[in-house]
Image (cartoon, rainbow, N blue to C red; front, side, top):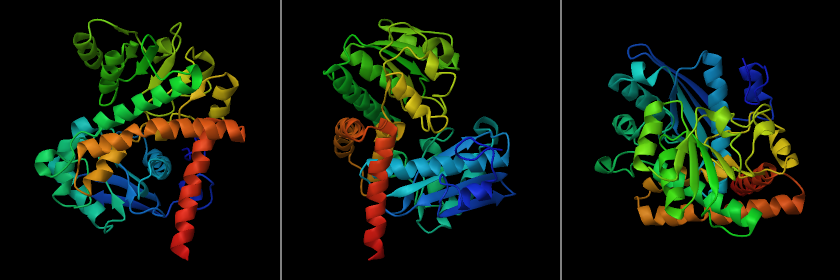
Length: 367
């Protein structure tokens, strides 16, 4: 098995001793009647109740699921801090194939598990879970966001996630080329599902040329049907990252997209996408910088969705959320400026800013 850095390690050692650990609480959940097996990881509540989605995924092993939950929860602490939210970071994973194993009984059992934490963790959608699923979970747990408007929620958070990534791209263009406009730029998107298809729309509305790929042929077909001009498809991600004259590469599927194999092959000058945990291991951010590739930290630019679900707890207002998500443009520029001042990659600069906010909150609470 691997720890959250991708290196072989014992889960408990990662949790209690690793620099990548430091989680406040990890809950292993099981309901035999429904078949539920889940992990809820709370990394930090320094800024407030932990907030993060529920991933439903067929992990190869339980250890892999625990490691993913730890990694994702830690990422949510940083994402929520950089988004200016009064929430810490948490994440849950349900082990199983959502197409085969997801049932109403299982989701209700999961809701009871989250509810047992008394509000320390607030859940939402992630890979393999949808608005309809959160409506079911909410029947057992009031600390559930990402619900449908009919059930008092904000609906699909991928709309503002895509909008935030789009703002991150505009900030990257401003920093690198002196102009935030993406008109005429060539953007490659790997993964055109929940978030990716909204991102394509933003880019085409501005006049960008878009190249897409997705493991699901139906997802590609939907995009090509909706955009008969200005969008082309390639066979796979390995082909996409090697497309000539690519300005921006947007990983919008699962994590680990930036690794020792892909970074040397990238033709894009900017990486800015919606996927979580894009850096496969520590040091990749330096490899990108050494190649002169500008990296917009994933947890900064993909924060539109968590901004939306956090607002749901206070009475959702879409325009208020959209205005907050638009500030991702300014936040991304501030990270690039900090990186230049400190002489470090943008990912490290974002970490420093987030850690400073969490430290100040924890210190204030201790006084």
